[in-house]
Structures are given as C-alpha cells and as structure tokens.
Image (cartoon, rainbow, N blue to C red):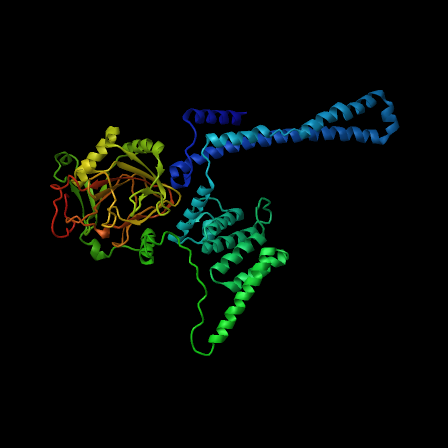
Length: 550
C-alpha cells in the first residue's frame, strides 16, 4: 500500500510540472538522472502487477488444495460419500458456482490495469529511445578506446582499475555487441560478442538470456570476415552449422567463404615464384569518429593527453608561475585574482576561485529547463547542427536575467581586461555519457565566410571556460598541438586568446573536451568577440607573443 501512495504522489508531481522533454537523454547526464525516477515508478508498478498475480495464484492454489482434500475423502468410499446429502450438495456446488468462479478468475487478466499504467507513463515520464540506447553504447565504446580499457574489465564494472558498478551480464555484453554491429563497427562487435560468449558459459543458471550460442557465432563469423579474417569466419560458421545444420544464411555464407579462400589460395600460387609479397587481406577499419575532423596523428595525441600520458616538457614548464593579479582593476586590490600560468605561447591561464558554489548552483538551476542538444556551425552554410563529435546539451543565459550572471560576467571582464558588450551569452553545458567534443577551433577560419553571420561583432577573440564541477575521471580540456591538458576543478576558469594581434586565428589553440569516464561534467563559457576591443587589445602588424591585458 505504501508503494502505491509513493507512485500516486510521484505521478501527481509529474502531472503538475508537465510531461517529459523529447529524446536524446544520453547527451546530458543531468537528464539521465531523471531516468532513475522513471525506473522507480516502473518498479513500483511491476511490484503491484506481481502482487495481484500472486494473490490470484494463491487463491487458485487454496481452492485446488480444498478440492483435492474433498476429492480424496470421496475416493475412499464413493458410495458412502455421495449418499450423504450434505456431501452431494457440496459436490454439486463445487462443480457449478465454485468452478464458475474459478473459471472466471482464470480468464480474468488481473494485471490489465498495470499494463495500461505503462502506456500512461510514456506520456508522463522521461523514457530513453532506441537512439539513446545506441548513443549510450557508442559512448561506452568511445571510452573504451580513448582510455584503453580492457573489455573484460569494463564488463566486470571496472574503469581504470576502480570498481564502480555491478558486473554486466551476458545479455548486456551481447546487446553492446549488437549495437556495434548495427553501426558497422565490426571491431567492437567481435570484442563484445566474445565477451558475451565467455559470460554465457559462466552463467549456466541464467534463464533470461535473449540469445543463443548460435546467435553469437553468426555475429562473430560475419564481423570477423568484415575485418578480413575469412579463415576464422569459416571456422565459426562451421561451428554454427554443427548447432543448426539447416541454417540457411550460414550455409550460404559457408559456400561464399570457401570460394573466397579458394580464390586467395589460387592467387598465392600464381604469385608464389616471383618473390613478391602476398596480397594483403581486405581491411575495413571502422571510423571511430568523423574522419574529416582530425587525422590519426592528432587523434593519437588527443587520446594520450586524455589519458595523461602526454605532457609538456620541463623546459616548457620552467618559466610558468602562479601569482596574485589585479589586472589594473581597482576593485581587485581588495581581493586579487589567483592566476596560474599553464602555457607561455600561446598564453593560457587558469584562474582559481573564479566562480563560487552558490553561483554554480543557481546557474545550473537556470540552465536545466532550457537544455537542448549542443550544436556546431556548418563551415559551408553557417547553419547550426548537431554532430556526433559533440555530445552534450547546452543552454544560454542572458546577462540581465539575474544579478549572479551580471557578477560572473563582470568578473570575466576583470579576468580578461576585455569589453563584455561584444561577448556572447553565457553558455552552460552538461556532458552526457562519455560526453566529449573533438578537436576544434573557437574562432572562425577564413573559409568559414558565413560564421557569426548577422551579429556583426567580428571573430571570437578570446575564450573563458568555467569549470562548474569536479570530474572523477576524464573530461580534460586538451590542446593537441601544445601537449597541454587542463583537468576540471570546480570553481576554476581557463582563459586564452583565440586570435593573434593581427586578427589572424591562432591555430595552436585548437582544443578538445575529452570523454567523461566517470562523474559528471558541467562547464560554462563566454566567447568574446573583436568589436569593442580596439583599445583594450590593439591590433598589430605582426603576430603577438601572448602579452595581453594581464
């Protein structure tokens, strides 16, 4: 009964605040948290469904026990039993009204109301979609690649050697492999189908498996073939046919693999005496991200920086200092800013205690209801669009909306020495499962002629990035060409100039947000434009060397 009251209370609250937002919950952990509320309601509903089903079965079982006792007594001496008028009456009653009651109860589906509840919940609660499932699977695989996580360790709930969750079942591993297959990611299909196979053999008592050994072998065989290993694909197909000799697709694949192997052997014989190498096996690598974004050299640097394996040299760090600064702002003489130099050229700094907990809490509350999937600007059309290389949700807060926002913006002006009249609104971002943003520039390049079209404020001269949460693992901001990584620390703010003094973009500021491995990442940023900065950061005919308002 208590569970029913909890359910009614939660649904009442949801009816008051309105229905759920649409889709893409995997792109922000703030929205993923709401799925636990959905699960709580569904568990309560399932408990109710099971309870009425058990009540029904218990009633029928009690009736059966009663009938069996009477029938057993009657069987000892049938004539004596039926000659008793009371027994005769009770036997007649059992086979008329009593059995009608039993039959009606057997026919009645006592769980109908609970099934209807689920339909109603879908219009009230936040449910993930198939896109969310695929996005969550891709995110987990991205983390596995970026942080070089062992498949079996991830399946055991370990991330970088730390036990975070319960183990994954064979069903969980199978579904992850299936999602990889749907995405034509055959490399990860093989990894996770093999893990599903190993776990299936360790779970002999698992009666909830939605797949068979034959299903795994079919996925493994074809994915192994797509990775170029035809011999292994044939071996797995033969193993599959031992289980299901009449499997039509497997028989067709077997003939195809045998023909391919025969052709390869023939080619080897034709080339055998001329001293040349064998023909390479077909290799169909799976693109782990958009190949147009960054090449493999930069990808390697990006992933090493995310793992903390690539760092500036001691000579690069030798000249860097930490100090208190006032930036010629009279107010800051009372409480100077804490500045930490991170890189000399281009000049990148971290301000400590740049945003307070109370400010962070208010900004988060203001942003949550406005979250939308974060977008990027199409370099050709200038239009804003979503992209799989930026997984997060964002909201924009105007300076005049709250005194706290005004204070943060004024503090940004004090930190940078720049005019905020040409700055964009404060963007608040929450990263989703494995949330990341692959290497990019904050400024618009020459070929992006339609960038910032309509605002007439010039290019983005500077970036200020506030970290609004600590992150347990991952989530660093990395500068791929500088071998520099900034790891999130709640309340700090990173600042760098995107343009040289001559107005040209500083390509060395190309940066990325590493995937969040564990924890949640909140950031906010101010992009500051050129207009209004003419006297604060004068133009020059030559490139600058990192000396600006500070």
